[in-house]
Length: 499
Image 1 (spheres, rainbow, N blue to C red):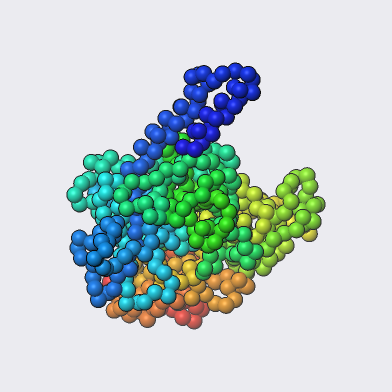
Image 2 (cartoon, one colour):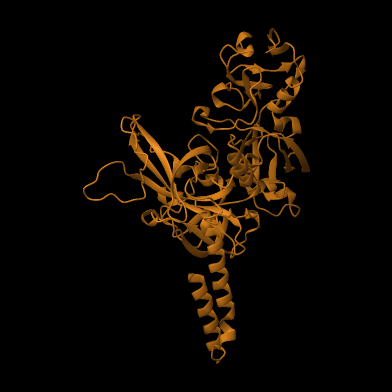
C-alpha cells in the first residue's frame, strides 16, 4: 500500500510544481491503483496458508487435537513450533485435498537434530482451520516443495479458495508493480496473511554473490546461479513460500526469505520467478515426481572479453561461457560442441559466464533440445547447435521425496539416465560419458532379481537395440510378454523372465 501513497504524493507534487491545486481528477490514478491492490489481495488471500514445522519426540506422539498455532499457556508444556513459513494453494482435488507450494527450506528439519525426534507439518488456512500436512514431493535444488493437506470441517468452495493462475515470470521487467502475500514469523497464527506492495528491482539476482558457487552442487540451489527476482521490499522471516502476484492477480513468483537466513545485509526481498523452467519444476512437484535437470557433459568456465572481440559487431555482449572439457559421447560432443567454444546464448537467453550456462541447461531438463548459439574463436565461426540434453546427477537420491515415480516398475526394476545418480557414476564420467540407463531399484524376488540385476548396473541394450534414456528403455520393453534379453556389457547378457 505504500506505493499508492507514493503515487498520490507524486501527483500532488507535480501539481504544486506547476502552480496548481490537486483536484479529485488528479488523484484518480492513485485511487484506481489502490482499488486494484485491494481487489487482487482479496482474490488471492483465500489461497494463502501459514505453515509450521514442529519437532516432537518419537516416544511422545502429538495428540490428535494438537494445534501448534495456538500459543501455550504459562502452565502448559509440550512441543513448540520450530519455524513458520508461508504457502500457496495451487490445486484443489475433490474439493477438500489441498496441494500447497512452498519453499523446501520451510519444511525441512534442522541439521544435527536428534534422530529420535520427528518433524510434523501443519498448515492454517483462511478462517483459522489447522490441518496436518504431508510432503508430496520436494526439490532441494530449486528450494521448492509441495505439501498435501485435507480439509475436514469445510470444503474449499465454502472457504472460497480459488488457486491463482500461474503467470509468466519471464515477462516481468524492472519497475513492474507486484504484491507479496505471506505470513510474517510471529503473526502467522490467525490464518490471515499480510500483504506488501513494491516493484521488481532487478532480475536474475543471486541471494549472495559468492565466487565459489558457479556450479550446482550438493549444498547449493540453482538460485545461487542467478535466478531470483530482487524486490524493493524487505521480506521478514516467515514470508518464505509466499505469493508474488502481479496486478492481474497472477502468481508470477514465490517469495523467499532465504537471503535473510544466509545473512544478506541488503534491504531487499527476493522471489523465485515463475519462468518456464520453474513452471516445469512446479508441475513435476504437483505430480509428486522427482525434479530433473538438464546436463550437457561439459566443464564450463567464464570467458574473457578478448574471446568475443573477433565476433564484433555480431555479438555485442562483453563475455560468454567458455567450454572446457567435453566428455566423449556426451550430449555436447554428439552435437559438435568443442573445447574453447564460446556459448553466448541458450535460445533467446544471453549467456555471459559459466554459471549462466549451467543454470539455463539445468532448467530445460533432460530430454529437452537446447539451442546453443556458439562462437568458435579458432576459425571465427558462428554456429547454432541443437543438443538433446542428458540428466544432471542427483547427489543424494536417498533423500528424495517422491510419491509418484515418473516411470512404472517393469518386472521389478526401475531405471534412470546413465548420469541420473551420482553414487553410480564412474570417476571419469566427465571424460567419457556413460551410455545406456542405470538401474536404480530392484524388488526382491522379482523377475529382475531372478536375473541377478542390481542397483547401479548399467543396461546398454534391450533385445539387441541400444537404449540411452528411460523413455527409450520402457518403450523397448513395453510390448514384450515373454523373456527379454538385457545386455549390461559386451560379455554380460542377462535374461529377465516373464512375470
